[in-house]
Image (cartoon, rainbow, N blue to C red; front, top):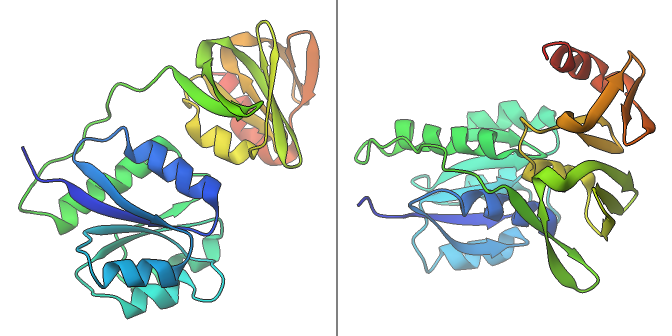
Length: 236
């Protein structure tokens, strides 16, 4: 058995750290040794512990991810995570393993891990295969974690800082962003049609260039998602 890769997650957003940790938990031989909300805490930890790989947010207060990356041992490999495309060039100039744009899907993170093994860990020469994915997720609602089967979701609706998950028999309300939820969903079953809507593909009853009908509701397809949505649905 190959030894575990020790990973550190650094991001000032708790939800972003949780998404990465959830994805990494599905991959063998990956050990999350620390999750930090700022670069100073991470630097203190690295000073006394060995780290193989860091998932590093770029846009953080006090010390940016770029500045932090320049200050640490170059043997520690970095995968940058950010919501902004304009940092990509500077990130790769620092010889980062990869550069992930939020919301980060499991498939995209898995590709980054494989790049780490291919380029920076030749002694192992082991490509990580996608594990059998869960068919459910947990969300926090009413002060407890509730299990939600993906097959029971009809559509998801965003209201600023919380979302409604519409199921077959009820609606679950949780304080989480729609982008964080999107990263947890299997892409083959769900599609984002609007900044406020994610729908279950199998529950769509009809669609036009402007709307998708699901559960007797007409949900708008926004301009930014229209091309991707229509291209996908026309394949069925």
